[in-house]
Image (cartoon, rainbow, N blue to C red; front, side, top):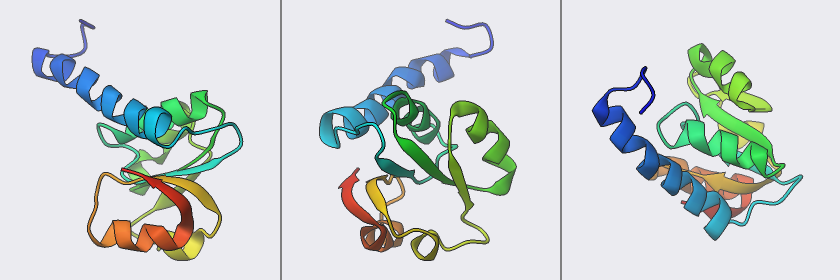
Length: 119
């Protein structure tokens, strides 16, 4: 266990990573060059999904508050949308895959921006 994690964080990490991996690899089969939108990109599943999508060669777009943008750039995000100031559905029109861990109204609006959805 990494020294900077407590037991609860260390126990949660595999589940969050598996969720991101199953959505992007097993379900969506993300391919190089695809545009992948990850909602809540700085969250528990989201920050891992950014790295997985980037490792598979995708162009990664994340939604997160502006305070999280530097971290997400370090993790590999190519584009970032501050959900507090920008409507992602209006800002995007060419997305191949959406990873949505928020559901509800966000999921409904995501369908207008993507070809396939994962999660």
